[in-house]
Image 1: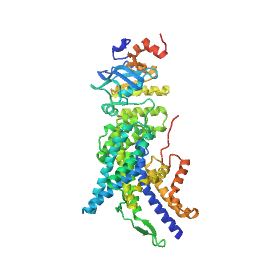
Image 2: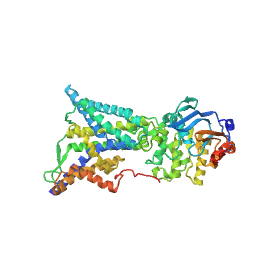
Image 3: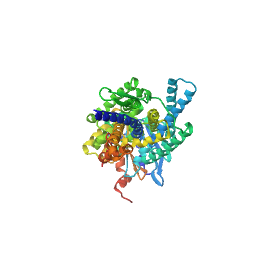
Image 4: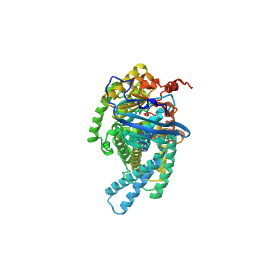
Length: 278
Length: 309
């Protein structure tokens, strides 16, 4: 993509400015990734990177391949071509289990919660990888397994406090309103104490107040726990406000990459969003 | 007094027989809860577990191994057979079908049924093998109150005790442990479970292993009652109304459903059978299930199906 003059621009963005968070080295990079379903090309030869500590947005019109890209990063989809490098290890494809155990957690566009389970159990499920006691101890439900359960329960309670969802702790999540379900899903992802948090449209279907809350949670997570965030979002106001760098996809191709300011001024991005051809 | 005595006797007999249905239904519930799959092969797993147990007992007894040691070794051997079965099912059948529709998985379990039936009988033989782990005679209780006392079958009481212990253990395992939570998580959403790092293949193995062990427990009781034989497979059919009444997703539901079916069909047989010609026992459970389906499709204890529109 020759048009990407912005590609090599600096990391610190216009939005989310005023904080002096350290944006570090490259945490994850995808190189020349292509993905096709039968004859349909979802992603064509896309490369970009995510740096430690930043908030990275992936935007683009519907069907641009954004969610497919997240699925490639967390191993649900295996790209036909290209590589994914995470924490210095280069892989042809990720596996969900490996991604999770290496520190990548995610939320989903259309919510993927354990609907029959309570808020508490949903978030506790996020601790699955951190709990080490074997089946036998668990079956006894005694001794080390019980202590472990209590210790992780404390960590989960902190997350519940942080997300202000104490009142729905014991409620089955399938019955909660949408905005709260989104929050529980974020809680489950945070329970994994991820290094890289992938958020697929965290604010879709939310009202203004809920969006502001969600933005605050994302910024706090990024600031205080130094969690790297990559998010897909359609609300341009939010994207430009909170992200450090933005990559823009259209029809599976990368058309721009840079700070929010640069991307906003990019003619191809404006065209893609307004649908002008020339 | 005689009338009341007879009623109580029928009720107790029915309830205890119902517990035995619950034992089979439990295996279904476990797999359904954890994978959303209706496991058609549960009956065949009871048969396989029973055959492995009874044949290894015979083998050991014929070589002069003391009875208690033979029972321990036989149970261990059968447990290992069920573990191997679980591993093979996971590896060969479920593994390639991850993220496929529930219907495909259900069809696959029909295939598993035939393989288990065939393989089990090829390896262990296809006769009727008597099993005598539990006493099969009866007590007569409350002799003073009712004339001749009430007949209570010892085997049924054993079955009840075992089922109670099993349910208590499973309830704790499912509700309070990491693996139990992971099992429920996988049942709810494969992709979400994978994204938090729950290894689906391991979880499915655990589920089928637990279902296999429950099948083994069911086989000890049913094998003692009927002898280990091919017709045990058809127990699966009797578990179906139990599941519909209790709810496919509920362990307590399987127990209560079993009790309702057991007591219902015995009472219907004794009191209704005379009026309409008998043989009610064989279809009464299905009528009960139909009635429940009309009023409460998720069953008495099932999770209400939540769909947001």
